[in-house]
Amino acid sequence: MRKRAADHRAETPAGTNPARAGEHNQRVVLQAIRMAGETTRLELAKLTRLTAPAITGITNRLLEKGYVTDAGRRTGVRGMPAFRFAINPDGCYGIGVNVDRDHLSVVSLDLAGKVRTRASCETSFASPEVVLDYVRQQIDAIVSNGTIDPARILGLGVALPGGLGSVDLPHRPPEYRVWDEIDIAAHFGMLGPWPVLVENDAAAAAMGEAQFGRGLVHRSFFYILISAGLGGGLVVAGKYFAGATGRAGRIGFLHDRDNQMLQNLVSISGLNAALERAGHAPPPPSALAASEPSVLETVERWIEQSADTLCGPIRSINRLVDPGAILIGGRLPRPFIDRLALAVTARVAPDASPLVPVAPVLTAELAADAPAVGAAILPFNAFVLPVETIG
Image (cartoon, rainbow, N blue to C red; front, top):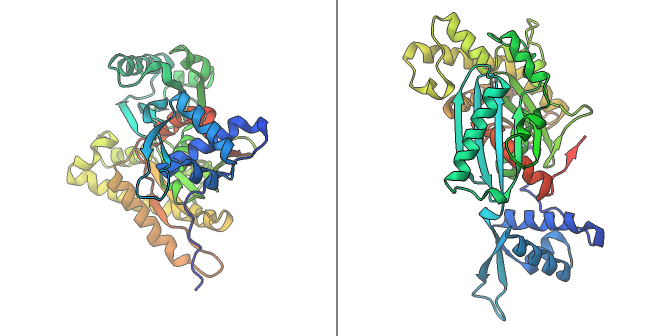
């Protein structure tokens, strides 16, 4: 049987030499340094296919901006040792906010992709005002304790599900519809002088995984986000595929054989409904692993049912998209996502054939914080990194 072609590691984007492409080239060089860890001007010229003078000018500007640091001279080589460049983690920061029906989270991310701070709370159907107050408190704490320099915050990213206020999930109060009536960017713009970028939560998670997770190995993948609902996102050759209306990958709105939407089962809301039917008060996702055996038995049954529900759509994704991987992330404890990935694999792996390869089903690296981290990456994508979206 023909083996599935292995995904290649992330390739450094190529620059272009026309003078008007200066900002693009600067983004390309910064990305090359980030991906290399440490590198020299000569290596950067080879990686980006830019001229040596262009590389010299760009690295000098990156040093002035504080985005990169001089990591010293390379030793053990003939001739004059070359300067090495590395990312300066404190060069700039992104703040990421994830708003879900049952959860809020705020993270700060540095230029090296490290989460500097994270805060979260479980809250059901919080109003825009409650969410804004919570995020303001977290940002004030981040700034006041000196964790990051507010002058180097590039922007604020906000990730939230599509139809946040209108999708009819269990226990949604009528007044929650207000989320679909407000200007999200203007609402969060009251927090500070930073640009606000708004994205779907599953799309943000996929973008984050592409930049800092398994996307550095699997350049094309389909991301499945298990949150209060169920979302999806597609990355093709390192680029997020937005689709004609901006939201390709709406896996949660597919229907199963009983004409039920997938997210009614494969979601935290679906798991909570299963627990309630079994007579259990649903614990927060973070506390599931410490639950009593009868709760864990219900969770295991939900995992098997969810694998049954997902394998059909995943078979279609394998045939229609041919991704390098199927990644599953979300706020469930990682061991549960691992078991779900294994259960789906057991169902779809026998489908593999010379004509229809089967992508591996894996737990996303940025599983729990994925939407918030993806939201924090949005300012980097907008202002310093060479990211493209396929529309």
